[in-house]
Length: 174
Image 1 (tube, rainbow, N blue to C red):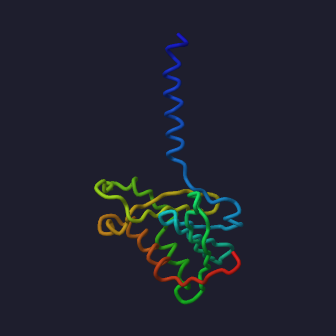
Image 2: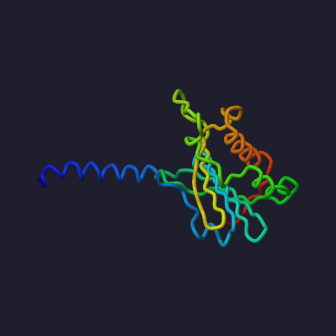
């Protein structure tokens, strides 16, 4: 009897490990939160990371650019901080309007079908933190779906704000 159970137990173990590993998500570590009541981290193709944190009632923002070194390890190239000019003035209202904290993952949108014909050009991976809850989700090429799904419109609007409207200044000494 023990011999017949072994293959089934092995298959079950492999399935559990596969499911656990395939659904691992980025989380915001304690040092990244620094007592923030709200936080948004967005990675673009794993090469650029934006981190926005709200402590008390004040938002801060940083952008980090990464590259692969000769050993194929991710290394930080340069860090920027957001310039608090007129483009930054309504960031809080924009975040609240887009409701990034409750957006579903792209694959959970009713009627969404992946474009299996081409590789995605842009993958936006989000980790959001509100009060004591953190969650992660991602969107592939949301610009293709802005007329089909309001969720993609919200993601693309946030991406446009962050990449095209906000001003950034290099942080020296990092």
